[in-house]
Amino acid sequence: MANTQSTFGFQFYGYLPGYAVDQQYSVRQIQSSYASAIWFGDPVIKSAASPYIQVGLGTGNLTAMAGIFYGCTYVPSAGGAPVWSPWFPGSVKTDATAYLISAPGAMFKVAALLTAVPTTAVGDNIGWSTGAGGTSVGQGFSTFTVDQGTLTTGPSAPFTIVKMYDGVGNGADTTTSYNWVIVAFNNQFLRAGATAVA
Image (tube, rainbow, N blue to C red; front, side):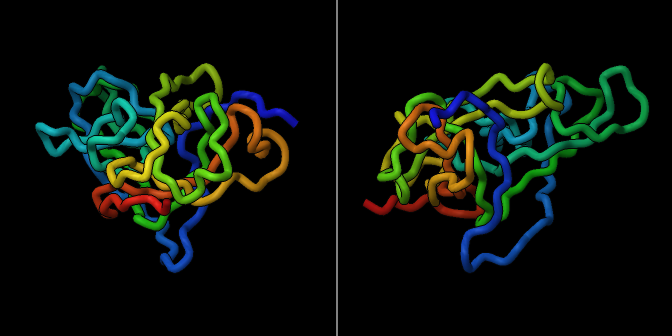
């Protein structure tokens, strides 16, 4: 059955063989004046000019990523008590506390941007395609995808394709657009980028 487009960012899937289960989130800071929203499941990077994190840009091929954004606490711009949210709305009262999945052995399920990621790409590295995210569907989920056009054996790409999605139904057809794949970190601050298996 042909796939239909369904974007959900980077959804936690499990751990690579040989890696300990690590359910603890990394804690990082988002500058209060940062105006862009960060959605649940977005890849995030460290700012080049400060210790703060920001949403990933471009295809992720130049900057080691910090992890996958999985919620935050912040004080709203109008003030009041801190609130927890699965997404960061941008421009808040004080610096926000972000929670990331950054365990080097973590794996994620993610959809292809358009053109199917082929089965021959298992072992290759791949970049992301940015998404707008939003709250119109679900509760602030990311719409990032991986882009088949960024497949590479070079070590700077942010993710490695571990396997094809082996579920049933949407995303499982490896021959049509919008298929889903399972990826792991490649170029990440706890995991040095590696040349892909040729």
